[in-house]
Length: 529
Ligand code: GLY
Ligand code: MN
Ligand code: MN
Image (cartoon, rainbow, N blue to C red):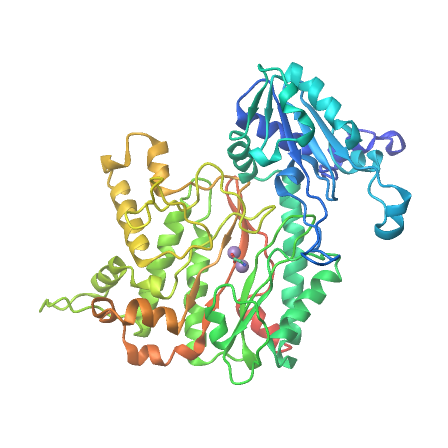
């Protein structure tokens, strides 16, 4: 029987349930998740929001950017707030500033308690002037206070006056919240999707105007125009519009050079939507046509990306995808003649497959693809990884005094790291006992498998960064013999190619959240077809 609904009397919450469209920030869902990760039955979580800051010797300051852990548990995107979560009582309270009329004159008003409650799924919204009293009285009952780090212990707490039985924990909340943030809620996915939609449309607009642009700055301006006109005022990271050799600088952002006489432009740009990031890269042929070499490298990166995205499903090791990208790169760079077998003194001619294995094992592809295949995307563009990174690389070359390496997205993946990753993955596949007897021990070495609700980028690239390749590869005879410098000489002017999409891991595979045109569709748009 069909349900009859009188829409006039349906409350907003019920309406959300009927349409299954989350219109409120799921702050309570997030708080519960973090509380579960903390694994305690009682305690009070306290998170301060960001304030307003000014640059040194100036009455101006950077644009307001909310603290991400605070936002995750509150959904409040304005300065001067705090949030508390009483775990035992399951009570989430946002503490907001009172904005006097004198400040309204200059900066406008801040949301009222009712407006905060309408926007975010909170139990209470109160004025922050009452917070000290609440903290002192609630802690009596809750017994312990959880903060992200010691600097965030509330100043008003009157530490000397606290009962000795009240514990202040400055270490458990950070790992608990990073782990809670790894798998995204439905609401979060919808925000990341919106950030991707806006940014994808802006990438499309850049393609449409691309043949008219004479300088990298016009590409940046066209992208920003597409975002800001959709009310997306913040970028997830500075726009990268790098042409020619600049395309080989991973985080280039000067964006001020002419495009004339250059082959390719890497546009890596993604807007934020309601604090959630997108991260999208396309590589455009200047003048609308690829050169032979530019096309060849674009095809290699396309194959790397297509095959890696095709591997995405729950349980897939992101590190296996990374290693697969290197296998594809090695195969294709051998075909192009940029890489070659090292000879090895053997008189027996090796098969193509044997040469691939030989060169792959040297890790030489890292000269051209020197960064990780991707990262989580969420409230940060390089979002938190939780208790286990996607591509944990614990190698003898990078183990520090703390006994383990933690590769960030911005870290290079050195040739030695790559070789170690390949060896350890092969050993683990062969059941090598040195990986420890537990799945957790193996994961420490091999990285974290994908789970439904994660959003990750897949962003392979091939770069011809002359300074890097000459310094670390061509200068070493034992490595240089695998590189044909004559062939390589034809590729320096290609600069670099990167292609990057944001992918949601689903129950049975993946969904590509990025709809920016690529491949033939991108070419057609650039050429007005
Ligand atoms: N845009 C930064 C990155 O791709 O990770
Ligand atoms: Mn990225
Ligand atoms: Mn990017």
